[in-house]
Length: 222
Image 1 (tube, rainbow, N blue to C red):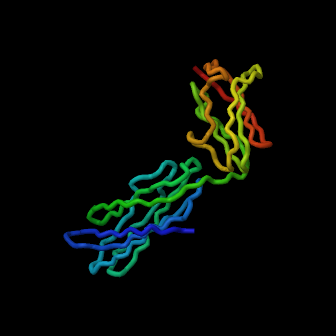
Image 2: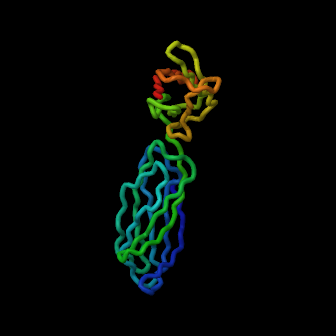
Image 3: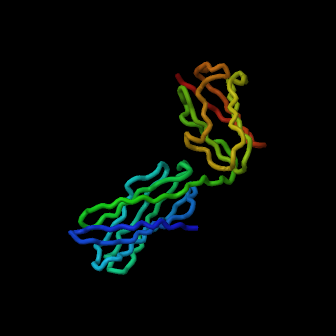
């Protein structure tokens, strides 16, 4: 499903008024890990033709990459030009309401910036798994990313080489989704149950999500 955001613009080029109607057409929701084409529809409601316009992206939200767009043809009075913008969302793109600022540039180099708002949701993974922590080795803290195919109670237990549990991280019941970036991944500050910094060395993390379990090696280097 797509939604249209209508922007009513009046451009003054060369001392002449160019009234335009610009419609930013975007999918209702964008899912991380995918490519999308956003469409800028520019209608010339004036009486004079408008020189070709190029679309540039001025501000990109974290995790959003600009791939390509095209330059419009000359827009005659009453005509509408459709200018596609292709973007890609990484798996680490921030969820929620995001704003992308696009710029219309004419052949004289004049620029007009306008925003596009869209909603980002997390891709639902095919499997539940824990991903490599980062950084690793680390000092003093690390992030432990993971993916959930289904909603589940999630916890992580940290053990030393003696098999002693030094920390238990309870994340609670989490919905299916991707937990990769620092705002969503599990976080270990390198401290034990008592709040003391643990010694340098190798540790093991037991990741539990519902009935799923896996063990990963961590290394602290001071």
